[in-house]
Every structure is written in structure tokens, then in C-alpha cells.
Length: 316
Ligand code: SAM
Ligand code: DTB
Ligand code: SF4
Image 1 (tube, rainbow, N blue to C red):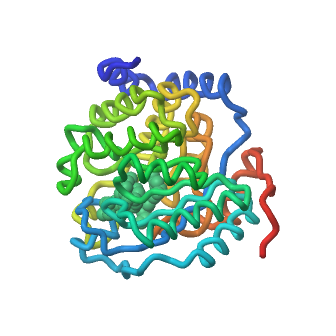
Image 2 (cartoon, rainbow, N blue to C red; image 1 turned 45 degrees about the horizontal axis):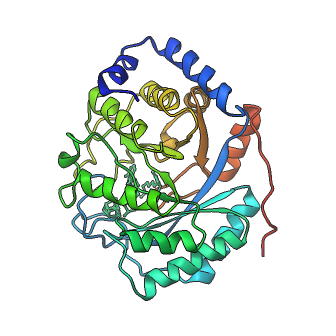
């Protein structure tokens, strides 16, 4: 198992040597032409009691996001059908909750998960913290994976979020794994963290047992009204480096190029795919932030000779 000091060394390697190594690992474990497309939907937006410094949906920040109640199941499934028809094979639903509470809203989310699975898509949700029983109910509903990010290193975490701890995050991840679901867990670049923080986070992820099935690499989307709105932009080559180290440490995971892709050039994204990223969020919106348009992404994949399959069901 990698230890943090070994992971730190990757951050000092010449970038192209690192990318070459990552591409080699990637091609040993994956079909390098396959890029999974996932579509995100915010099923419950804003008004969140947590204080995550990057987030547009915290009730503690004054952002332009309008809070809205839980979406109804038919609207969610109409979105999922459209996403499948456009080529997405995984549908991820996010709720701005601190934690899951048992009751009618959670029952509705379980129904949404069943509905998405019935469409033949993978289903992922991100609902904040959950306990063992709630994890079991999500598993019974057919959930493929639960997304719960560590965001950054344990030591930098308190500078980003104060309303929960790193251990809270790790506990939820254990409940997800014990219930038999895949763990989707990654982080964000551009919060003000150092290379050591990046290395520490990747070491923590790679030491999870089992390793996450899916590792989203987000780049901070600067949201006006949040405490981190003025952080410096991330160098695109540092995103490539992060993807490469994630790929080397977690050879079997899907490494997802997540938030912040709108700010990456086509060429930077191409380098990320070479370095082992093999999934993108697909659709003009992430949860509240914009994402490249479907046509633009399809053209990029075609130009790179990557697989663009339309294997979802027909639109309703
Ligand atoms: N409330 C749940 C939670 O925090 O676990 C789920 C929703 S939350 C929006 C999902 C993830 O999106 C966060 O953990 C964070 O990694 C990412 N995220 C949120 N806002 C972001 C931003 N402005 N830029 C980049 N990533 C962001
Ligand atoms: C993840 O790591 N990134 C996605 C998904 N998991 C839920 C969310 C990105 C959110 C970006 C900011 C927004 O749309 O508000
Ligand atoms: Fe709430 Fe999640 Fe945003 Fe944090 S990241 S404020 S928990 S919605």
C-alpha cells in the first residue's frame, strides 16, 4: 500500500515521464478508447446547513443559487431518459443535504434509484452522510455507487469545512462499502492546498480497502459569494499530474474528470485522457455550475478517436 512519502515523489517527477507511466498502467487495465459518460442532476438544490467553502449550495454563503425542494420522481426519470438517449450510461443524483434522514424524502430517493436502474443505467447518488441502515436500503434499491468525496488532505480539511470532520467522511464511506456498494470518492484542486495535500489525499484514497471504484477529480468552480471564490486558478498541467498519479495508485478505478472541465482546453483534456482519465460528466450542467455542451463534448471525443456510443434507451 502506498505511503504518503512515496506518493509525494510523483509530484516531483518530470510531467511527461509521469504521464508515460500512467498511460502504461492505464492501457494495462482499461480499454483506452472507452470514456464513460455520466450525467448529473441536482435533485434537491441549495439551503444546505454545511459550510463547505467552495459550495454554491451552502445556506451560509450568499450565492445566486435558489434553493428548491426535492424534485419529483417523474421529472428525475425524464432527465435520466434524456441522458441515456444522449449516450450517458451512469446517472448521478445530488442532494444538498448534510445527511440522509429517514422519511418520505429518502423513500422518494430510493424510488428514483429503482427507476434509473430500470432504465438500464448505473445509478449513483450523493446525499451527504448516511448510517449503516440507510446504506443497506440504497443497496436494496439497486444503487450502483455512492459518491462522498474527501475533497482534500486530512490536515487541510478544517480550512475548507468546519461543520464536519474527515472521520465523519470516512465513516460514511465504510457504511457504503459494508452495504456492498461501490465507493465513488475523490477531491477538488484549487482550494489553496499544497502538492503535499494533494499527495496525502491520493494516498488516503489509495489506502481505502477496497480502493474506490470511481475517483472524481474536480477543479474548483469559483462561485461568487463563497469564501473560496478568489482562489487562484489551477494550472491545467497540474490537473494532468493529479489524474496521472491517481491512475498509477488506483489502476482499476474509473478516474473521472469532473467539475471545472469548462476551464480546460481540448488539448489539456486530451492529456488527461492519455494520463488515465476515463470518464466525464456529460450535459450542460453539473449540479449548479455550467459544464461543456453535449455537442461540444461529442465532437471532442470523436476528434480524439474515443468511443461515442449511443446505447441508451430511446427518449420517451
Ligand atoms: N451534499 C453532499 C456532500 O457534500 O457530500 C453532496 C453534494 S456535493 C455538491 C458533491 C461534491 O461536489 C462535493 O463533495 C465537492 O467535492 C464537489 N463540489 C461542490 N462544489 C464544487 C465547486 N464549486 N467546485 C468543484 N467541486 C465542487
Ligand atoms: C463530484 O465529485 N463532482 C460532482 C459529483 N461528484 C456530484 C459535483 C460537482 C459539482 C460542481 C459544482 C456545482 O455544480 O455546483
Ligand atoms: Fe452542502 Fe454538499 Fe455543498 Fe457541502 S458540498 S455545502 S454538504 S451541498
